[in-house]
Image 1 (tube, rainbow, N blue to C red):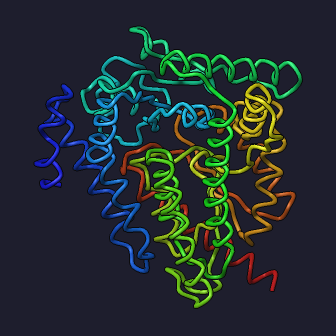
Image 2 (cartoon, rainbow, N blue to C red):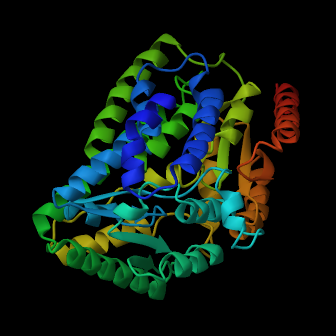
Length: 434
């Protein structure tokens, strides 16, 4: 940590950050990463690249984006996987996710904002207003979306000085919802064209679609490899890959995942794994685990279970469904891009039976004995939808456990006991079936 701080402290000062507070935030993130991720045995060698992405999120990546901006590029900060990356790629925009996943900045946010809102929103606002976000002064534009009430009003605060764009995500996926979303995507494309001074053309947009589809294929292959017993990679390491997907340069990230997949294929064929064969297999479902948050995955896998799939925005929702391009013009391709993003199974939608159907299918395909529903405090959509999810899983013979938590470690002890009891119940159920 001291080496990183020494190398990048002049950059952070130049960006107007609170260097001392930022150092404390970064030290806490690094300590959690070492304890919950990097120190675990049996990690694939290819994870070294993704460790570097996480460690470089506040250093090397910041310097890279600053240099590209000075060379004429534009930088866009995002907060949700509904932002159409194809448009940003096609117009040569640098971008990454700015969501906060650390408890360290929440007390700063709670000086101004309500305490009883989502910790992800509070952590993000705390980063923005405490001088701990290295990207604030580099942003040419930030992009939010309307997937929950806390976010919608947070964008009012973050965007009151301008330089903010909000994508309205419809609440229903019917005809009117599809029309609204298509116009939102078109308006977003016009906004990015104005920002960059460039115009979308068919060739560049088609190339961006192919690149994003290649990224999704690489992540889908990684997911498929987790079907092995035992899986060749932990769920915690897979989460690190997914967090990297939201902050790393796209082409570089794709090559790293494809290389990791080749290694994992060899490990699976040889039975190399962080886990013993025949152990409990768990799916994590619900809220995203953004950069800084590895607690739940660590608790589950430290208790002896393998996380084999993540039905979250830092999991299957990010890479499921490719853009099905017909080879038409820019207008047709934008319509196909919009259609792909509206397939995301977010809890903001109603009705949302397809999400429960996806979870049941994943549990069967990955031979998972149980699903852990991970709910952040005050995330009302996922918390209420957890009732229907639990009912659908029970009808399919899949046990589930709902956990409500935040980014602190204060509840790790009680949560660990609940996870262990859940795994024991799965083992008893498995023995009874045999």
